Image: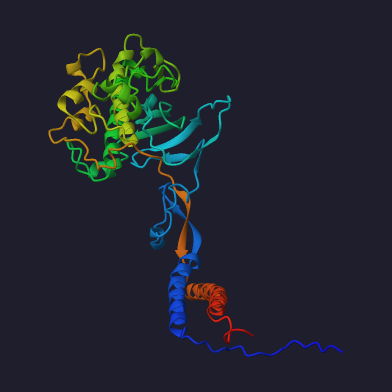
Length: 426
């Protein structure tokens, strides 16, 4: 009869080792803990949160980025959707715009929205302008359309307007702007938008005051009390003569120095009487062009400044006597009078003042603007102290136990090879 030995269910779990390994084991354990704690601090100590940021290329800056590959710009933020009808401002922040249209795409459709990732407006410039003035209400409106189609990835059209009004006591609706503005000097106010608003208000007041002067000069007040004129030019191959975006200026550098050529076509002039009915004054239509051209020149300079098209022929940035005299009408003809007898332009008086040195711009304001939007970006935020301690401790313990088990297996294998007949044999 063969006796089969039964398996042993108990055996010593400790064995004597002939060579001392304690210092080595302790050293490995300390090194492992020293590595695991900062590693788990970076892996588990942060939580992802959503934040708003004006920079699409925002990248979180954490201490552990020095040891890892830095994230690609734009990988943490969602694109901003521009929708037709949205109200927008540029990074310069002078005027307010409305997205009027997204141009037809390659498949023949006209989308209602377009993704935006912070591309500059270097390919944008004024494509059309219009002006209206009401002598009854003493108001005027200057409208400019901005097209971004020349060398830009965003084929869109924006529109902006500036309204001027004056109360009958002679005060202006933008009196707060004028109270902080030194007549004849463009650098008295720190806020760029305040100064530009003041200049545009000058142009608007010139316009409705001049319409009122012509109206009162007509017999029995039978002349036009309301005027409107527009010069709409569809962006494309036939750009208006004043088209001068930052991109276009590289191929046509003279547009940066030549006086912007804005010609008002009197055939496009709409004249209405006090009751809003059309009225005709043959031979006197050209009397309105001076004030209209001044208003459009001021609006053109303001929009280009807002877009970051900072060129020498901008009357707000570089109001030299030659440029002002060649760009802005000094006086307006009222009733077939000579220039010397016409009403004086408030806009000209302020721009051509002895202290007018132009706007002082920062380096950022001299660069092409972007659309000022807030992107939804993801970033890592440090957890609260309690959650941080628990997360790092649990992760460190888990990693350490797993690593310690592997380390003991390797150490046992090594010891058996070193002492094949020794106490490591069961």
